Length: 295
Image (spheres, rainbow, N blue to C red):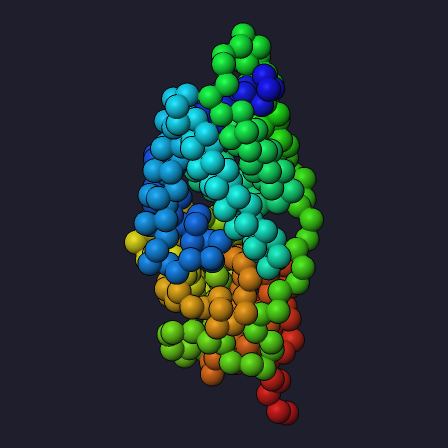
């Protein structure tokens, strides 16, 4: 029972650190929730506040012996919801930041490490719920520190180490129309981005400097104010289209993604654009697909 009863201090520490990271940038956390594409855009801000409040409430309940089991159950519900959202992301082949600790400045992609960490936290919450208001033991702080070390020790992707390729998306096929809530009047490169997508940030300069003889338009499903602030912070001045339904309408699973069209809005090439090489390959594919003038 001592081992089970040692989980609650570790849970309190994790919940407060996570809430502290999110409260510093509630808008950024809302954008991270939106990137999961499990809620309508209009609900993501409310969801961000609800998750933040639930984390703080669970930590407070865990700190009081009489309510410790309720706090553990609340934490378990939170972690189970997080696991479900991550599973949905992985099933759809999306590549986004998890937003677990409000990590807008240090993106952590949804993947094996984030799932394992969240699974461990769910296990700790179940342990605390089973133990309930167990008597204090001097061993508890030691075991709690071990649990915290296990949570913090989950490996992060290292700089320079390439992540495994996600399955190729369905996306719009060449020759099909690109569904967008804006007029397409010229050969255009549409670059789909999200403020919560770390890879999108690294690709912004590549999109801005695309030398393809075509205009480049950024497309996002996020809140327009958040996107424009994000672009301003990164010194990017490109036309922007906000279309909350662009992903579902075109069967696009994740940003960054690029769609190259002709003047009539017909897709010449489309695909994931998470590296400069892949983006250049799409531009080359589009050039090859352009009809040649008759001689």
